[in-house]
Image (cartoon, rainbow, N blue to C red; front, side, top):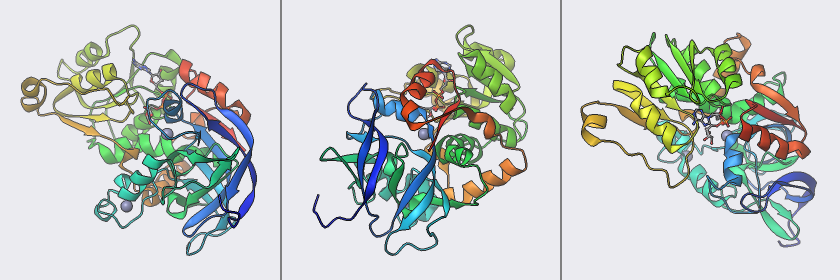
Length: 377
Ligand code: APR
Ligand code: ZN
Ligand code: ZN
């Protein structure tokens, strides 16, 4: 890196150096100053999401070494050239899809598919494909144009959503991924009608939000499916009206039995496994919707009998990326629902941890004990 590059000091961060490696806590991260259109932010909190684990185990691919973390809330410390509408001291939620507002998709109100954000996500850098972190003489990539497992980060200004100062930053962090994705799947991606029977396969940090999104949309029955009893109990608190323990009961038969053998109006897959994707599509009624939210390994295929499974069944099978969210519109809407007591957010925080405990948070997620561990900086 050239000497002319301004440095803003050293930061502590959790770094993934190789597949299946524990995250390395480093305190020598050199952070470059924000360039035009960027912000330097001091992280206040970061959730530990299943997608972070998916980077470690290779379900999702990335350049390495990389600072993981993409579900964060932070305080703006410095603004780069040309940034308007944000100033030092502002509290922000980090959107891991920095929606440019001006590409093919952004112009069609599908900013969650933003072409510029997708390119950045693929490189492991910011919008210009380069990273602002260096450690041990090598560049460090930034997960999802953010890297929230770092005390300090540089992010695109369009990836910041300003929020009021009185919002708890741990709660704000969770909105950044799990809440927007889960509630968005139910409130934006799917078309849930009042009284619909909804099934949710997988009740982790994201699935619990699908459940509460379905409740807010007026679903009648909400069937929660998981293999973990604690999660099923939480699912009831978030609005599930029935639960199925998939380690004891076949979830497809259970949903068929509960719907007069017709199937659910809308079913969501919120894990990312081939087997549960099949189950989700099968448990949907004729004319119903299967919404695939979980991120599967790249080699997982969706296989269906074309006639009985699709044409005759007239099912809609729809992918869901970032809850089909327009972050600037949806964040205030969600904060409003939270204030009114309709959206449960504090209850998602199972554990508050330090950055140094991030590997323990990964272990807790693997065993399914927690909805979310949240790092407080
Ligand atoms: N059947 C039913 N439930 C299962 C099964 C299964 N075969 N396997 C796992 N589960 C449950 C777990 O018990 C857990 O409660 O799925 C849940 C997954 O939750 P988390 O690990 O908390 O994952 P989450 O952060 O909610 O993310 C879910 O969405 O954004 C994506 O990449 C993310 O693919 C991941 C998915
Ligand atoms: Zn996530
Ligand atoms: Zn765009």
